[in-house]
Length: 119
Figure 1 (cartoon, rainbow, N blue to C red):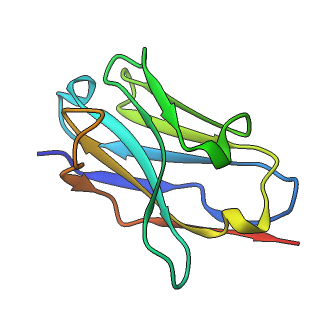
Figure 2: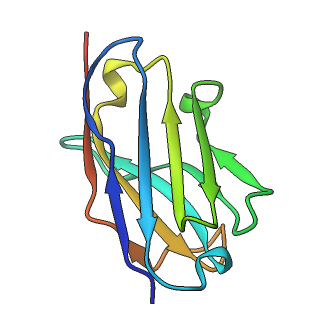
């Protein structure tokens, strides 16, 4: 099993930056792909970005390409989401999730961290 804890959310003005962290428990962190998802009020949860266990493969949803960067440090059991040029429409609760398959259903989820972008 993998336990995930997100941090780094907060309130930022449009155009600003935040870096989210996802700390994982367990000694098999590198076996898991990590994904970031978000859910805005009144909307369904949506995929944001994902990274393979080795870090060699990444995916992004179109709306964040060029602004967000996903990365991981397997020596620290931590994944990151660097968010630049933030927009009010990026406001949401951000969740990290883990799965052995980067294209999987993501079996393990964190509790989420709130990101609010003011205009």
